[in-house]
Length: 465
Ligand code: HEM
Figure 1: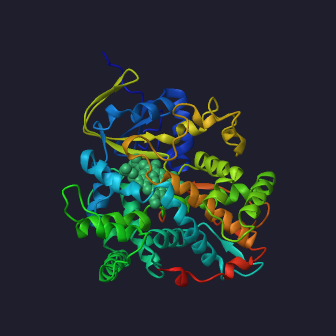
Figure 2 (figure 1 turned 120 degrees about the vertical axis):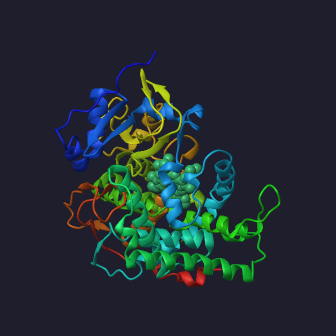
Figure 3 (figure 1 turned 45 degrees about the horizontal axis):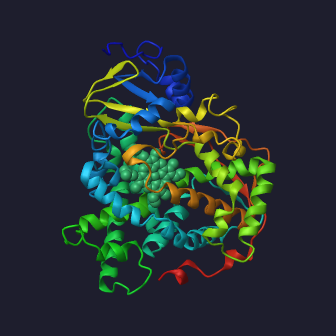
């Protein structure tokens, strides 16, 4: 019989746990887990949040039986309605399985191998106007090249000025959804009614429609179809072609998925490499080998072991998806407690990333954790940067390659250094202009030390099909 009351974190009258939650939610969630265990409640004005976290929770929510219990439409449905398209993460059951299968076609190892060149070219193009000695603020710059990389790879399209619209419309909506999860206030959000947002959304949708219309005029006959060619030719199991709504929805993948994930992670990865001279040297040796004969291919990328470990260590120490929300559709028992249905709960995937029993000295950037002798991430429930269960990140493999390629290309192309060299990164949480809690605080500057001849390779327009 599960009758125990779920423990509540100690806080102040009225404001509850608001202060530590705003200052450093990751640290607060980890410390509270260490005090109260894998299920607890925290309070903010007007609401009580139920948190499930730690390795045992990561394993528990990954079980097949939990798929119908913890659902996502109630979390992401507003995003779907506002965008006017379906999103994989908001689907459940059979529709989710069907769409996930189609999505996975575009994220297979063979497809990812083909995306290497466009990803590198878009990164080179991004850095082509930088001058030797120039100081570049990187934190707010990465969305554009990241969006361009995937639009070029998946849709053979260069979004150009539309990037700004895609970024503005998506980040505004996500910010509203994330904020809603932490506030008691419901209802209309003024940010979704500003002319800046409405124009950006209109232009984003027009841009997608324009690419579809153009392609419909002449679907290329090719052995190597891109995502849009495939979407325009495949059918559902009953033989019906995909609807315009379906096609729009799948196209969100390359345009939106990496904006608040890969783009946010690149500055952390680059910072940690530049800050650690030994790792920097090892990574540079790998990068120089990979680029020795021009643009590398996927086999060259796979040989970059230290860079891959640096990506994993960055995903552990800076988990963008630290917290995901779920709606409890059916009540369930966990760790002697009952979790009632009809509420949103928060799964703190990233708690286990900071537990010293899994990762000794968890706040130290240590790439050797992933070497064959230690393999700390392989302990059950210990490593969850890409989520869990049915909705685990469909783009995880691509994300790792994208992060490696983006940073390898920048390192090779412009030999950046931290500016000033003594710069120490600070993280910040919850800002008025960031949809994702975790971000670099203030500016993160690099100084351009070299321009590789690769930077002046053919322009993106020449690469487009
Ligand atoms: C650093 C990079 C990334 C991180 C940390 C990340 C993390 C995550 C997490 C935590 C989820 C689960 C969300 C939830 O359960 O509520 C997720 C879902 C998803 N991600 Fe990623 N992601 C990254 C990059 C990407 C990229 C590059 C793509 C595709 C181009 C992608 C596509 C998706 C999709 C389609 C889903 C929904 C899967 C489903 O519901 O079946 N992600 N991601």
